[in-house]
Picture 1: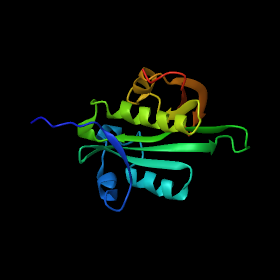
Picture 2 (picture 1 turned 135 degrees about the horizontal axis):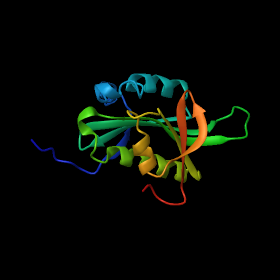
Picture 3 (picture 1 turned 90 degrees about the horizontal axis):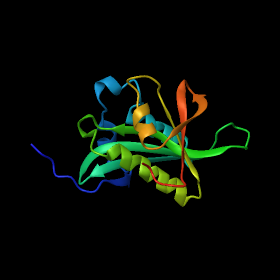
Amino acid sequence: MSRTTHAPRLVEITPDNVDLAVDLRVRPDQEHLVAPVAKSLAEAYAYQGTAWPRLILDGDRAVGFLMAFLGIDWRGDGTDFRSGLWRLNIAAGEQGRGYGRFAVESVAAEVHRRGGTRVFTTWHPGEDGPERFYLGLGFRPTGERSGGQTVGELPLDGKCR
């Protein structure tokens, strides 16, 4: 059975759609790579003003969740403020349809709108991780690690590839 697809869109998490967000699941083999949406929403509550959580809809179907971080003090000393993609969860049955690219492009647009020139993200290294996805969009490793993950950077002088 084919699904009708619409242009994906981001929506704020509200009382009307929070259950759609929390119920979203990645593939079982990916669960160790990304926190569940419920944890992300708890962190968004704790980091209000920095976290930017959004549900990705295709029509009325929840196909993914993203959370950006906006203007965090990366080193904690007031010298390096960064913005980027904190979490990306694309539903198990919705992967490979462009929703991940849409999510990254949406975060890049929001960072640019706020005056940023670079987008950062992190990923688990290894064969089963999303490194190829991020490299394919133009992210390049910075040589840094955060929580055991590779830190990647995407300059906003162009578009995602």
